[in-house]
Image (tube, rainbow, N blue to C red):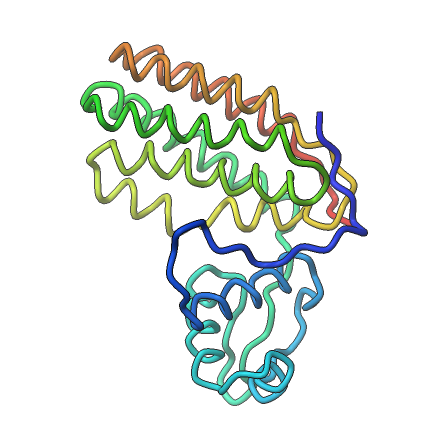
Amino acid sequence: MIFMKTEESIFPKRPTGTRFNLSDDIFLIIRKKIMTREISPGERMNIDSLSRDLNVSQTPIREALARLEETGLISKEPLKGFKASELLTNKEAQELFSFRELVEPFAAHLTARIAKEDQVNLLLEELERGNEVGNKSGLDAFESLAEHDERFHAMIFDFSDNALLTKAYRSTHCFLHLYRLHFIRDVPVNFNETMSEHLAIVEAIKKASADEARTAMVIHLENARSRFQYPAI
């Protein structure tokens, strides 16, 4: 079990091998400020101030804020500008889990029926990538697990070959909002449990066992809900 420590600092990390892109970097920096509550929930966001603080022009700031608005991490009000969104209430978080429990087992079921060998291999590669979290500690481990979790579940939707289902899932940005609740807390990261459950899902998909994949996803989501902690303080 990995514990997140609030005193550790985190910085935006670009995946190895990707090219420099100022707009992407500014997006990551501002997103990190929101996730770690350096920008507090409900706080107004001034484009001029962000431009000065980050020493860039207003253009990449505006581009980043537009992308962040799509995630629901910020909102824009007429004549008032942007502000960071409030944290999810416990009711809203539980509703997200209920939504996930409705759509994700079905996505796993579909993927197990039609997944190609190269797609199974990509899922296995993602599991290997996720296992690297075990070599990290503190907030870095917490963030890496969050990123793996989001990638893994998104891949299952992508491989389900159901565009409407995938669009509905992605529109919630559920991992950003659920992990945001815990980003500054000393909460345990259940690495071994999560990875074991992910492996069970992939093994079922690899065997093309749709019913087993559905069941494995149901178990994983039930356990994820039970591991969830609220309030976020």
